[in-house]
Image (cartoon, rainbow, N blue to C red; front, top):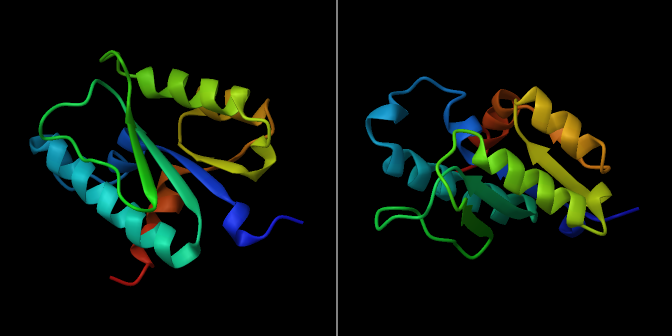
Length: 134
């Protein structure tokens, strides 16, 4: 059995951000930075490795990685570009049973489950984030 430190998350960043209509669309970069901060607290508290993938290339205002969170961007701005990056990462992973992908995208969920990864919905994960001490 894998211990907690072996658990890894790959987060569909915009999917999690979009799961809560809190005005995130008015300042997308700020919403991304806020999510990365929340993921850092989560990863530190839970001892999990976290990668978050955002659609589109990195810009000057984009969030950077943190100690416990790797931040990746896609090479192009297609609306679902992160889905392809996440699916490719899971397919290439030699130990995908330790992976959990956070997304509410049905097609992406099917793709990563086919390679052995678990899936948790964006809203359910958002509740986990909300439960982490600040």
